[in-house]
Amino acid sequence: MATLSQAEISRALDALPGWEFRDEELRKSFEFRGFRAAIGFIDRVAEVAIAARHHPELCNRYNVVDVAVTTHSEGGVTHADVALAHGIDAVAEPPGGD
Image (cartoon, helix red, strand yellow):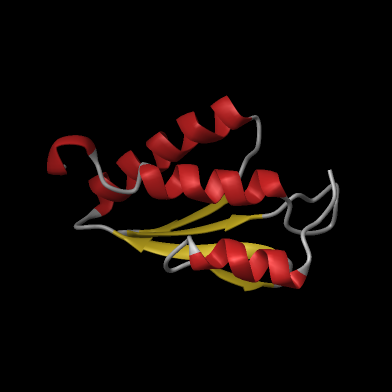
């Protein structure tokens, strides 16, 4: 799997509000009402990541979860990372407005 060019990453970011490209990773911070909501998000991200067989880096600070996605084996961002970012955004809002 080849890494994306800067132009391809820029186009991908147009469809990924709040995400940025830094240090060869796609990154976004998600803020929630509290710790339980943040952990619920992490659980939902885990399900997406397992299904994709591609795993993000997650860092939780009380109600904030920082997410970074990259393909370490390729040394940068690939289509798999863009797809995972979209999947993560899709589960950012808890079902039923948790």
